[in-house]
Length: 364
Image (cartoon, rainbow, N blue to C red; front, side, top):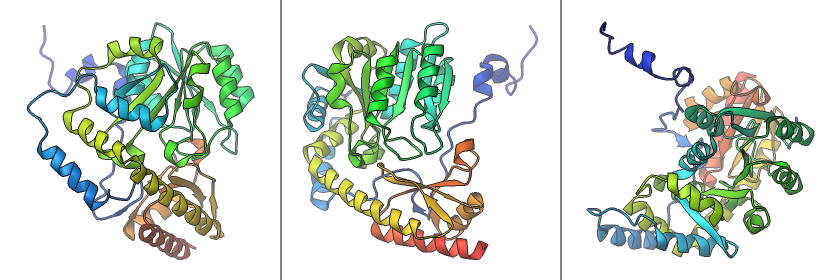
């Protein structure tokens, strides 16, 4: 057999759809006011940091973590008000859970369906797992295009549907009645992704027992635990008992379990920070609305989507002024000239607005 060079071996062995992928890009944020990744900008209070430090110092990191994370799951049940009989499955952020779900239902010919634009990892993970992906465009105002969605469900018979609620990157909360129509029309599993639940006015967790094909997925990353990488699925034992078979052993480490449990004991502290972020969101929305060349969209998340002419140039101008946000221009036709800014602290928001106005004035 002829020798294959080290550089050509991956090309020979990897699936073509993997070779065609671009890796999920995370820009270097060193030295910037970081408003690009929907993180909570606030540290936990010093006294709580002290409690966490003591707990971490005593942690048995020489041992494997509790494989079932029983204590942490009880805290999650308590703070989320799960309906009776519903279970919890933990993941390394929500990304691992999306991948686990795709693997579980990916029979030959199975389809994953979502709307577009939405969270990019749905489509990427479909590609990772070799699952066919169908994206249904949103209406021009970023609401659900129900005729198109229902027609796609009837045509494609998807095994798995993801709906981000609120949606990322648009920030809006879809009509609950429309989501219910999709759940009722779906022949397969519907996962309502509530990553931004702490900033939104509605949730499908209270409805879990009503729909046998519904799961709700959440992450604590946006609430202030992004560094812990902790997400969870909630739903019936019938679903989660099967999905547990695919969860890798010890996927949530000793320290994430310990720190998350400590933070959930003080859940009210994180919710107070979320309220501060919501107040900041309202003010930032008003400030963006007052800039004549900017169109800002309503949001029930911890970020705002806005459209401005020459968005990429504006994005670069903000970077030059020390502010990093997310450039969505070119990512999807419906996001032409769109940028997304995370709601930061009051000082960060003010610096962003000043930098934005200066950049727009200079480009005029």
